[in-house]
Length: 199
Image (cartoon, rainbow, N blue to C red; front, side, top):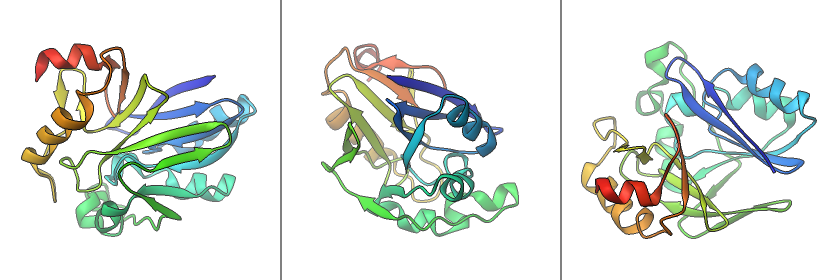
């Protein structure tokens, strides 16, 4: 299994490259050529870009990588408004008004399959309306900006909802097995067992 976390951009977003020979790219937030180099140097075959949500620090590398590797981009159906509006995805703040037209949209409970890879979608609104986590197997969770080590995503950005994020974490994530390893959008990994102590 190939599993690489690359910190990208000024906000140090975690971009994940995950799979066997065929891989997905999760949240290419910036530094697209750095992500490209890892793929090329390891002779990987990327097959899709998955977005946990649409804030600029998770999407700035999408256009380059999509064109470079002919990749489809997927996000939750409730994230369209943020992905298509620089005022909501906050890309205007960094001086580049980015919009993303996804090739496909998923929803709660969907199973995303790419080659031998299979991810269950867990819709976790709160940080944004379409914030989602990707569960691989029963013990690897890519949590985006919903759940961090000892913390959770901010909800004071456009369309954020603190009540929703607490409900998402409590009802959808903390019910997973305690041994589930959590790989967040920023910072270091944690486990569901460790985070149960904080909520």
